Image: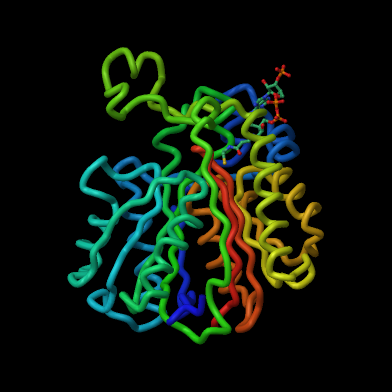
Length: 331
Ligand SMILES: CC(C)(COP(=O)(O)OP(=O)(O)OC[C@H]1O[C@@H](n2cnc3c(N)ncnc32)[C@H](O)[C@@H]1OP(=O)(O)O)[C@@H](O)C(=O)NCCC(=O)NCCS
């Protein structure tokens, strides 16, 4: 069916905190080594947001950079979606906090929870409002302060995560540009392998939940690794195939950054040229919903993507959730 409008990304921005937590720092905190972390994950350092600040701060900064670059007023925005699993608080939503801080008085706002697939999910949701002609300017932000749910005494998880935010602006564009296709999936049986057990209605915060460290990320790393390798590669290959494309047609591949070995497997399966792959895991680690928009923003800043280029996004994360999106870059 012909869409009345195409949702195109017309602006990108990102924010990462200044404070660096290096592998050398972690060597002093837990029984690990720089050699183990870099060879098993590709991570060299990660950014950590100050204790006094929440996810909304980083989300706001990433949105401010877009408005500033485009000379736009926040009052021109129609909708703000924040993909996050580390909201400032359960309610109101982080998106509402951003809406107020930035002064987007005309916009409605909500959070979306799909963990590391949050940005791809939110991009697709936001695009629907542009494609139907309902809205003219939708902001999609992926932001997570993973340091607030990371146990820095657990070497199996604390080396993996960092804090950051990235944002995109969606506007109606020419039919040949913008979001071309997407594949999204969920399988809630993944709760067995990756979750934050407490803090919600099932296990509200109590002395017991704190003592049992139930407010931190719990992960069965090996299971999650197997899932991520197979599903991220599968949806990347599927979306290429059904759009008549092969790896070398893609100008930029922006995968979720959980482990460099997961990305390498995905690149091999889709036969993508290595120089087209966006990697920021070495500098930022896994920033959950923020990895893909940060990657897009940095790639655009570096002039790695041009109007008319095919861009492929792919993610896998808690839920389980996973998906891919194919875009034609608009500027
Ligand atoms: C977590 C992960 C890096 C572990 O790498 P791995 O190669 O699978 O390592 P294993 O789990 O097989 O553990 C190997 C050994 O290293 C040890 N180890 C784990 N973390 C370590 C660390 N930080 N430093 C040193 N050794 C560590 C383990 O205890 C284990 O020791 P053992 O063999 O004596 O039991 C990897 O499984 C992974 O990336 N999983 C997916 C993570 C992810 O994507 N999470 C977010 C969802 S998007």
